Amino acid sequence: MLLRHPRSVLLIVAAVLAVLAVIGTGTEDRLDPTTLDVPGTESSRSNEILREHFGETAPFAILLRGPGPA
Image (cartoon, rainbow, N blue to C red):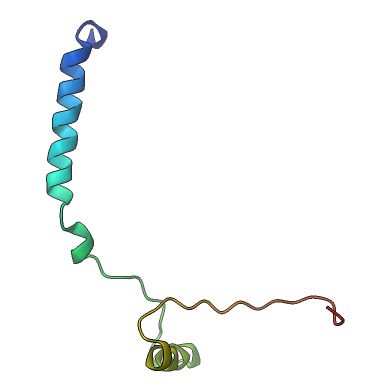
């Protein structure tokens, strides 16, 4: 039944998408970034030191292991 009126279906879908876009405007500003800091732990203190020295960036510590000579 929907295939008999493809333009109508496309218009309805476009209207729904437009309404959702209007509703979603500004949503990013209301979201808080996820944090995994547990107050009082060593990792929390190290994150404080990183913020003091590097600001609000997203540093990632990477531990590489390989053979000794490498």
